[in-house]
Length: 260
Image: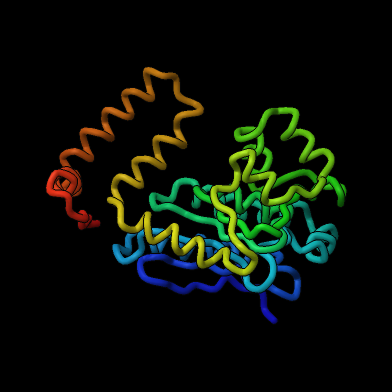
């Protein structure tokens, strides 16, 4: 079976499904390119208000294909460098994408699969799912932004332990530490993510984009700069038609109908 990234839609949510079940949904360059293309197409599509990334079958993603990596050792280093650039372009695309992106995780999220899940704005995980920064087990170091994400979201010594030791972490542990937003029963991750997406889809798209931008910029901004950014976004959103709709709907005790 050919490894691919499948696209489908449910309501206003685009679903990107990593499809390589024979290899536990291992990633490859063709998937990176397809993911970037899908996000670019959906960004300007008013019918899409959120994105879910999931895996086909029992697992989310086992990371890189080790057979492909071994074969790349016989090629010039630039071959693997270009492949990683593709992955990193996808990760950055998710981070800068103006609409909410949700990871729906079943089974294993290992190596770059873990990095990919961490890159999403929200993470839904089945209770039996397992996360591991598996790189050091096979003599490699992290990619896909995994080291950056864990260093941002965990105490330094814990992030270091997870990457140095490459030990499996449960979904429950990640939930306790705040990396997983919602736990669900086995087999229900996609449906749980769709439920979450439907709530996000009902909110003003311009506000979702503002919140993503503000939260992502906050770690590197000082308070003064962040306050300026908040002011600019607030004023812009107040004078957007959705600002009028949201306030009037709240005062009238009715459900708001936001426009793109």
